[in-house]
Image 1 (tube, rainbow, N blue to C red):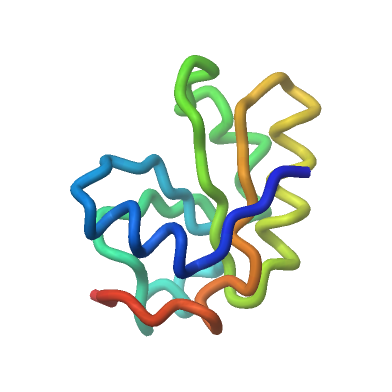
Image 2 (tube, rainbow, N blue to C red):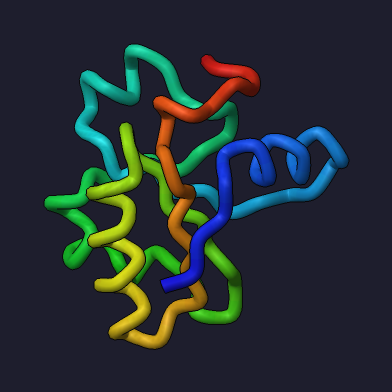
Length: 98
């Protein structure tokens, strides 16, 4: 499974890169604070909303600590998606939050 640190994600965003981030936390967790412009798909709904994703695009999966996003990463990889897990999740995020 590919991984990226929260710091690397933050640096790429600050450098103007357009990243495809998916937050797999629950609704209340996302409402409490999330990375700007992130797509929200709760882990439990991922299999039902997979059709919204484009296999030609790389995705970075985000959760609170990296566990659920790791599960999501492995799940989507199994279906041929290019996905990377953000290690440490939002607990490691020091960037902008909405």
